[in-house]
Length: 310
Image (cartoon, rainbow, N blue to C red):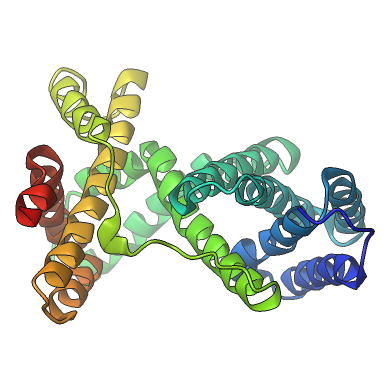
């Protein structure tokens, strides 16, 4: 880590953070984009300066966020501090890129949980209640539309129940969103550090992604447990089991996609099959994730890569 006194880039990073906060306030509909850009100045500060200077910069940034529309800027600032801090700390410890990704994901999860609590407690706005109200209003409008065109009475209760069940999967949705934000932030940070400081940070090829077998055991364990708990998310146990089950399934699907990239590379084929597979998962997620998950299970369980190497 650079132990020299503060240089011009120290103030540049703080200025970039100020600019991003101002843009977020002026264009709140772009907050999703700025969400993965805001941690980058924190990461660069932690990479280039010791903790005392980074803490000073963070203190200045936080004071600025309190002055500029704090209802919006403070939550985003907290997310940036936690996620950027965890990614930056992992980089200074020279951890593996996938470890950095995992720490960044945890940072974004903690930050988003803070924002949820901030909205519920400070702003007195219930996300759950408003989501439920929106669903009811939408279904009433749809029901009225069906009746106006002579399609008769339709039972929308099942649809409402399914939509409400998605609320119970909020933890796994939160993790998946955090994974996407973390990898974008980390990738951009690597690009900046490689260009400005001539570093050599990079992600290993996706085909080399290899999850630990414990993920497979967790998946099957929760699958078996799910047979004995309510499938309507009516109990805490069912909510926990189904969230872990879906998260493990998504990770195994990533393993399956990674194997397709590995297979094409090993066989010397073009990127057509991996690209088609990714597009199929994106446009037909229900079928695509199911098929890719099966491939991931086979790859993890039977060690297909080692067999192919032989």
